[in-house]
Length: 80
Image (cartoon, rainbow, N blue to C red):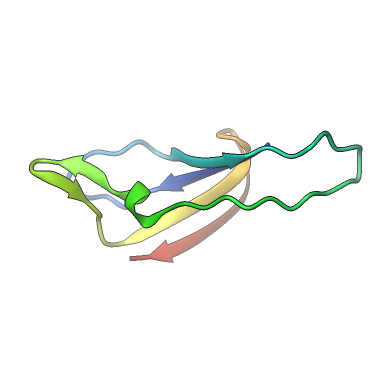
């Protein structure tokens, strides 16, 4: 299984270190086998509810991919 977490920039409200935003499960794989999966995260899924509605903080978002929250194997960043 692959899980995608996002670490949001500091904004108007406190946020957790990272939040699960998507996941995908592979078929049963034998050692050495690989399978490509696609996980889509909509931009609205990066917003947080604050005060009078949903807000999308500007700044750097870290995209973190792994088999669990404690086993992150790939990171990248996007800037909004």
